[in-house]
Amino acid sequence: MDALLQSPAAQAALLAAAGALAFWLRDVPGLLVSWLKRFVISTLTVDSRDEFLFAALVEYMDAHPALRQVNQFTARSVRQGTAYQSLAEDLRAGQAPRAFLSPGEGLHILWLEGRLVWMRRDLQVGQSVFERVSLSHAGRSGRWLGEFLQRAIDARVTRESETLSVYVPNPFHGGDWMRARLGSRRPLASVVLRAGQAEALLADLQCFYAARERYAELGIPWRRGYLLHGPPGTGKTSLVTALASELRLNVCTLSLASPVVGDEKIHALLAGVPPRSLLLIEDVDAFFRQRETAHAQVRLSFSGFLNALDGVATQEGNVLFMTTNHAEQLDPALIRAGRIDARVELGLCDEDQLRRLFLKFHADDAAARVFATEHVAQGWSAAQAQAELLRRFGAIVMSEGPTLQRA
Image 1: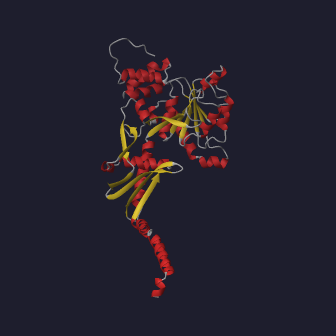
Image 2 (image 1 turned 120 degrees about the vertical axis):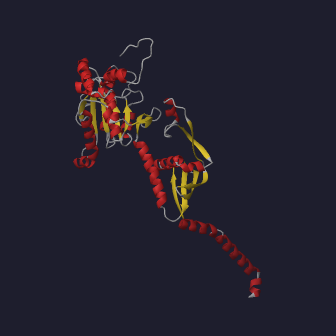
Image 3 (image 1 turned 60 degrees about the horizontal axis):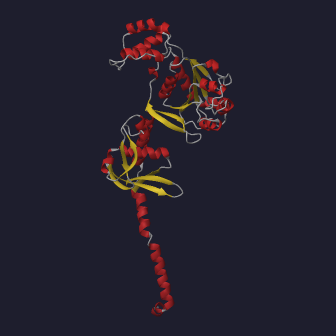
């Protein structure tokens, strides 16, 4: 045996075996650590390829008091107030922006909601570049991590549902929408129309959204169109905004006379309306007037618009509102059944409307009745009546100086 072990061939074989064993054993510590981590550590990982979940988790973490324990930051953007406005929106609103700090890349150890948690934030570079955030804690149960993520989702949903996003066509990219502004939702009661008009429209929309299966059974496209017509200032745009607010929807507003909108882009825009949004096409009569005069700004053809409205690419569940001051100028093909399902006239204020508008500003029913009786013959729009009531009861106090001419 000793002679065998002393032979060069045997020694070479033993050395090769020892090398192979050492090569294999070098991975054992890492495998043991990985195996132990799977049994004693729970980890939740979200990356920026999931736009909603990643944004919800990062926003929730950034707003969490545990952030004060972190001393390594990255300036991800500039925010103000609610911390959900963009820098451009801040500047348009005349607000002074401030730095918005987020935990930087690397490992952060936090005491979070009564437990020790470590967060790792990494930038992954491959075929695409994305960010990844991992949250870990001791213990095999992932229940707490799931609940933490759900709280982040709920916070994001609450924030989104409490605000109204208004989208416009993106002038720089074909066929997509960009958020123009983010504002507070408007109660339906704040729009004073003739008795029952707003409530009837709200009930009709609620029935439509609840009837998806019925539309499918009948083989009818699940879409609905409304035409709001009447003199300027009667509340057409305000009504759409208030309906969207009540139903927790957003608004996509579109001008057919815009030079941004052509035959190709209108198809992409109507097919790409964000989910849970009302599509608002304002002053559609202006499109017909400018089209008849061959206005150079108009790039959209009438046939292109109709084809886009009827196209198979148009999303199911879309609700279209068109507004006009002159319904008689519209082409009958545009407002036929199937494209427009209901027409609502918003006229000048009647006596009851004037009374209710007065009560918004001053809770005196007797004075409201007198005001309504005195001014109903003047044929005011809701905007004109509101301007008069603002002059009487609003917060604007005219200073001494040159007299301003009233509209």
